[in-house]
Length: 228
Length: 228
DNA sequence: GCGCCACTTGAACAATCGTTCAAGATTTTT
DNA sequence: AAAAATCTTGAACGATTGTTCAAGTGGCGC
Image 1 (spheres, rainbow over the protein chains, first blue to last red):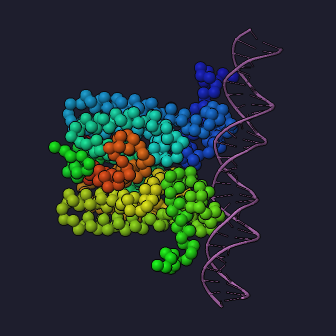
Image 2 (image 1 turned 60 degrees about the vertical axis):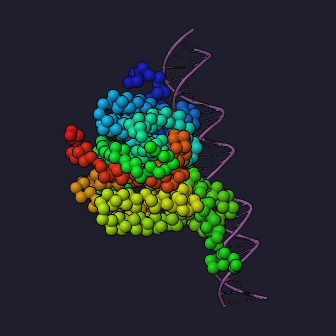
Image 3 (image 1 turned 120 degrees about the vertical axis):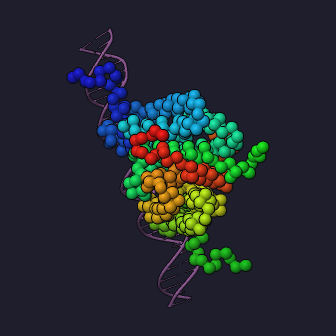
């Protein structure tokens, strides 16, 4: 009679079971592709239970973000603060890049279905359907602005356009790896694999860091802004 | 003087009308989000006509790729050949990067709903649903391998992993811009806009070119070792 | 004991999905 | 002009979608 989870309310275990299954199915099939019944089947519960616990499909979707998002936010914040204390400029650039990349790839490695959440996140960013659009704006825009400001501090002579494009380039490169579903391994014949989180993060960080540090401003100087 | 559609069979005009509407709806809503009825409404034709002309929803989807894909392939090929003839190494690196980026952004600017196709393409690459998966493998893998080989030629001392990760970083950065639906403009306060194809391409090319040229191999030389 | 409570269950709901069909309209061929 | 092939149309099909509902479960305070 005595159950292992005595301290928590009995519903919590099934709630987590549903959440975990949802993470897996959403990550594999996307928001539209995932169905309540597939999630219910994988969680081994009746469909109605999901609506009871999470209200609706988007409610369940939001719950996934609410679970894993704060950790990323905090780690990025810490990463940026750490970068600010670094006296050496070259290392500081690298630390800012890592503040963006590492927390995301770290989540993939740490959490059981972190890769699924990574896919969900990247898909949400790229999904034109309005469903969860607010999610991203509310959750990630603040830390994104901090990242952009950090880049601007590193390169005081850059225009705002250059700073912003630098951030977007970094973000896109990261998303491309997060969202990969086997093509990288296929194209490389196994020499590169997005499931190898450490190696993936290191390679991307390396290129992006170099890209920032050695960016040739002459190429984009004549844009809209004149510089002295 | 004669009617514009004199030479072609009469069905072609409606076929193109459907194709154009489909491009728009697919680009805006994604494959799952788009419905045959929404496409039919936008094209101002009955739903059944779509099935008559294209067989099925995926048939229509494939037709979109069949229409715009060869041009990109050809332009990338020409871009790589052009790079091969460039004697200056630094410029050659830039030309290889441009061979990847420019045709895609050029399509966005040239074609009426090129941006929609760009979104479709990026979404197809990132979509885990198996529907159109084969599309990408059949259509873009060959040119991707050529791009990877071109990078390997530029940097003979790099490992295959480094070469592949370099390509994937570039690809991801490009996709990130292609798939953007307003967040870049929002975050930058208008200083950067993915609808400004020329500026977007230029900025991304600039960073990626620098990233390749100045990549610090010490960071990825050893698998687990990261000390200088 | 009883009643209250959060939780669980299977069945059913209306809506929407892609697709099919038979019939009408139009063009092309004979 | 007659016949054949092609294109267009509105209505309907079965399947699947997210959600709701009424009934049922077991535990805890009284």
